[in-house]
Amino acid sequence: MNEVLELKDIIRGDIKFDTNLLDDKVLFKSDGMPTYHLANIVDDHLMETSHVIRGEEWLPSLPLHHLLYKAFGWEAPEFAHLPLILKPIGNGKLSKRDGDKMGFPVFPLEWKTEEGISSGYRETGYFPEAVINFLALLGWNDGTDQELFSLDELVEKFDLNRVHKAGAKFDPEKNKWFNHQYLQKQSEEALAELFISDLKKRDFSFVEMTNRSLMKRIVSSIKERANFVSDFWELADYFFVVPTSYDEKASKNWKEETPVLMKQVIDVLVSIDDFTSLNIETIVKDWMTTNEIGMGKVMQPLRLSLVGALKGPHLFDIIELIGKEETVKRIEKAIQSL
Image (cartoon, rainbow, N blue to C red; front, side):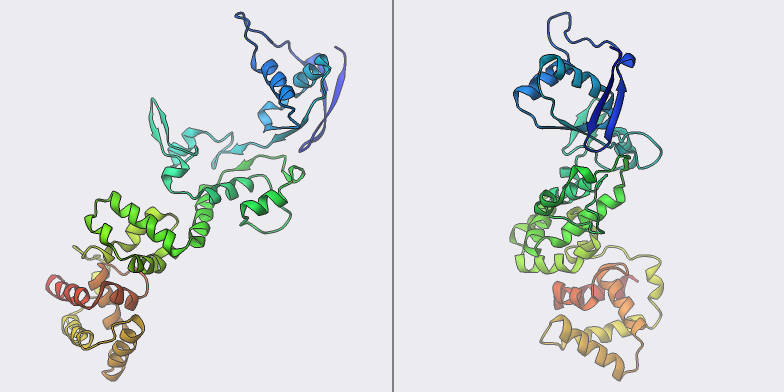
């Protein structure tokens, strides 16, 4: 051989290979079938492939493939060897085991092996657009600080010349961040339908009759705290199910005088005709101001009564959404239980 091949890679630039260091490759198996190296070259040539874009682990095969093209008298395509996606922790290429160990998907769809089932991005609840956006930025950027790209923007801006040579560490938390961003972009109508589908899986028979307008408002009140639609239930279960227990730490806000105050709150709520969030808030706060009652003495016990914990969106939005009758029932239950 005694030749130095001077080859060009779109990402890595000029690369030199000493042919004396190349080993002999098997091109045909004993049964007459071609090996990958030969079949790959022939397929790409017959398909008139202009660019071969593959992982950097194939870089050592570049001189062999180039020599095969040359031996056949064919023009070689352009090559681009992408950097590897690396483990989140430690060194080395990302693997299925990393996902199983750390609890994030690696495959697009559910993957069944002898060891069990690994959930895919679809089953975990990732939006396709979020996955594409995240993967595009593993080893590439457009030269700006922009992180969210539509598919059309990626088509327009993506350039192999801006792909990095070094491997990119996979960040599961950043992946979730992208999905959060795309969840916020979804219409409330679309999210409500997805949430209803999730509720059906939880065997809630009433969901078929659920008011879509109400569901949209519930989704609107909780979506900012969700990364996935599957998070909605934990964030909104109290809209559908009366609390059966109360957070122990939050229960410390329930003082000796709290039952009397909660009964007074019931009287105030029952007297309200325009049972909308803003009007309820105005009347309840005016009542507290008039009677010189501190916010903490009412607001936290009231939230605890309705939710079972000190969590959730705007308190008066919750009151409007579950309705006057349900609100009163929950306060009365808390008075009896706490």
